[in-house]
Image (cartoon, rainbow, N blue to C red; front, side, top):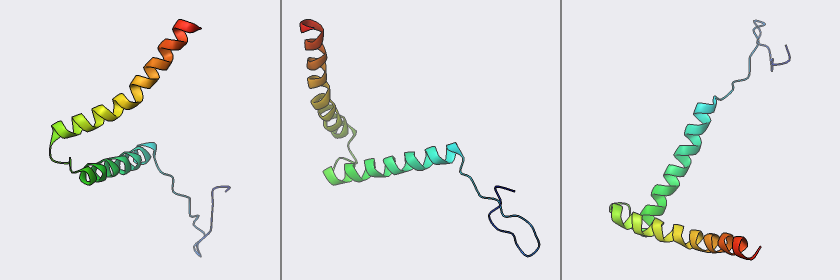
Length: 78
């Protein structure tokens, strides 16, 4: 009875509806897919795959190179 929220006039309990993990994953995935498409449209790279590779490759290098330099310097001078 702890899950019962309200009772109808017919005394049938209304149970809360829970979302499955699969549905939650699909919702999160569709959100990020939509934002990815909007970002591609904003930069005008939604049609050409090679432009997307250049853009996201350059973006990933911007984060990877300083991180790799930092880790390497910690190994050498620690």
